[in-house]
Length: 112
Image (cartoon, rainbow, N blue to C red; front, top):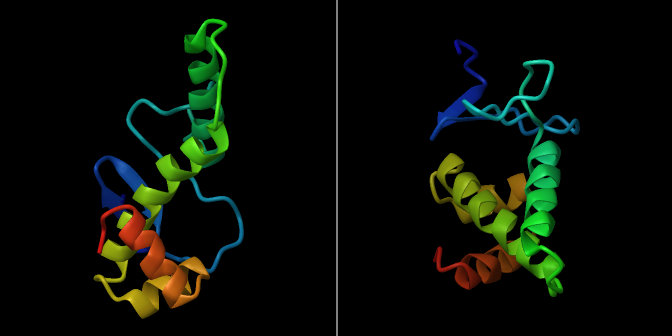
């Protein structure tokens, strides 16, 4: 990739032009749809949840909402903090959060 607006990290491509309101695409080596185009983050979450429910094999599911949020929120915070070079004011702005709320979330995931 030669686009300077993309950040490559652990085989994932992140669009650093945070201004777009369109869903961003996450391209991974084996995360392609049937059209050989990269899957969106939404596609990855949907597929993962489908696999999760399939793997339950009839067992009851509980607290899925909190589980999914924590699985997505922690890496989101990690990547944004790296992107902003650990500047909490900038990270809060990028995320659209109050700085105090960001600090609480960082503490919750052991990132502070």
